[in-house]
Image 1: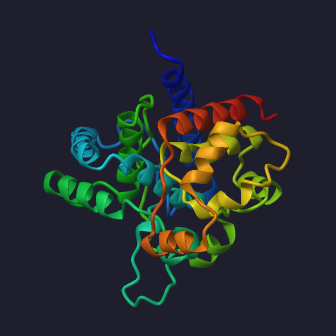
Image 2: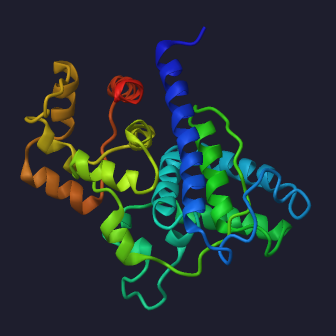
Image 3: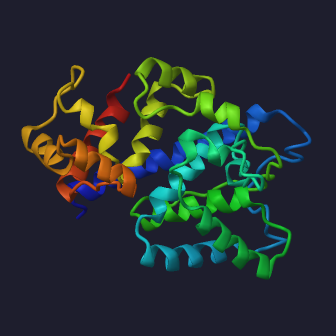
Length: 281
């Protein structure tokens, strides 16, 4: 019999997986460009060109996650940031050879993204079997799906046939990626521009629960719950992990340390997120 925490994780992961897939579909449709999308996305797109793609991605992800347990969270966030700007086209993966800060990955909201090396590693594996066939955008979508499964979420099929962008969108990324300290009105507006309602927005934002959070994003809320309630035990644990000490916070900034919550805290976080998904409207 499934225990309560696993059941909550399963339900929540399924919602996130479904909406991530929906986000990709919304974004692709929004492109509206025949040059960028020559044919509709479909299942089995690589069956005749690279039939082992899912096996390659799956086995590589399994090896990676065994060594780095935080990879699924890294890829889920990387995919989200890619798809949110002009669709799931791998534009966030583009590097700027001139280092002048004009590519998406150099925009402030993306500077803490991780997982680029993972996609490069999987791409190299696929190129050995199917050179010049599989797009990086499809690899990112598949690798993220497999990461969710390896993290305890449910399996879901993904459409393929995406084309990689040759253009990056620095200005749009700076203006339109939701800020971690942004207000709810602005966040809902940015998601609504991409066709998402309040329920879907909450589910997508809740996807961060499989990862970690930095103290700088939550510390100011310890004394201002904005009409919500936090159990005293959970609040005390958070305050211990994120002490109100400027030197400690500065040290965390310098070391780029993201403090993880304990299993009990994560369980509460998942419970709250699942409640919000079902009861937001």
